[in-house]
Structure formats: C-alpha cells, structure tokens
Length: 212
Image (cartoon, rainbow, N blue to C red; front, side, top):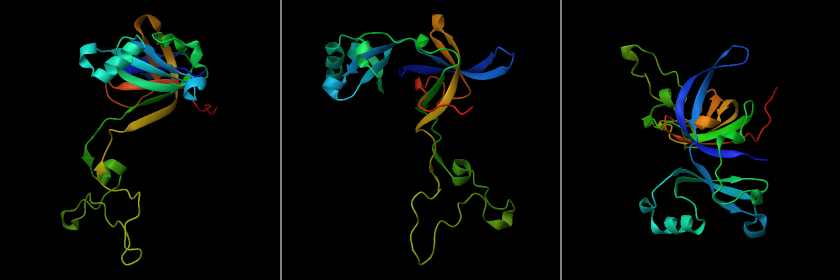
C-alpha cells in the first residue's frame, strides 16, 4: 500500500536513537491533510487520491475552485497534490489523513522546492575551482572555454554555465522516519530535506528498496 501525506517543514533539530546516538532530524508538521477527490480504474483509468493541505477561506478562491470543493463537500485547501494508490476505493472524500500512517523506521521519499538563490556563476552553481587569485591573472571566477572553434562551431547542450540556481523541484529518496508524534501532528525525518522553513513538502512511501 502506498502511503502519502502533505506537510510543512518546521525546521531541523536533534533526536536520540535507541543506542544513544545523536541524529540530525527535520521536523515536518501536517495539521490538516484531507482526501479531496479519489480516482478509480473504472472512471479515470487509474487509481489515485488527490490530497489537500492547509485550510483556506472559500472567499479567497476563484469561482472554479469554489465549485470544485463544493462538489466534493470538502473544506477548501490551499494546496492540492495527487498521489497514486493501489485501491482508491478504500478512501472517502473528506477523510483526513494523519501522520500516524507512518511508523518509526519507515523509509520515505520527500519532495519539495529547494531554496532559490537567484542568478549564480559557475563557481557557486557548479563548484568550479576558478582561476589564480593573483591580480595579474585576469581570470578568477569566469567559466573559461565553453566550446570548439570551427567544428562543430556551437556549444553543446547541457554545458555547465552561469544561470538560475535553486528554486526547483527536488526529491530526496530513502529518508528514514525517526519518530512520529501523533498528538502534535509531527514527523521527524533523519537528515535534511529540500526547502526552507515553512516550505510545503510531500512525503510518500519509498519507491526503491534501501540498500543494506
């Protein structure tokens, strides 16, 4: 069974393992995550759930979205995300999804938007070493040669060059769930996850087996 939930990144802290080891953990809060729509094989051709996260006033939505939430009789949500599941029939519209679907020791994949860092050069964006530091070199943080001369007389696609850095969708796989605090709606994940504080992330069951 595929498990998934939408949450908000609170920040990072430390936790202790059963052996007394100090673990860096990321805290994710999921206070209101609800099934807005379910899609079935008979009607839609595939089985999936559309989850909503974070309540939003009906007056803040446009008319099409107001009609969408009224159709399924669900409290409006600020964020929507669709997840594939094996049997969507096991769920109902309006059913709340809580953090207790995960257990300590589970492995999950976390998706979020990485921190945007604006336009960056090759040293910051790709880790280029750069040129000599002496004043007379006139070559410090420039990218250097990017292609050939007469043949083929163009720059190949995918060349590492200056450009927009960060602010993109990133998925980190095989993150271990350290602890689930049901009473506080918190999930503690081992290590770092994409995005800054208050960033919206999706957590779902890992699609790959963790190598031992």
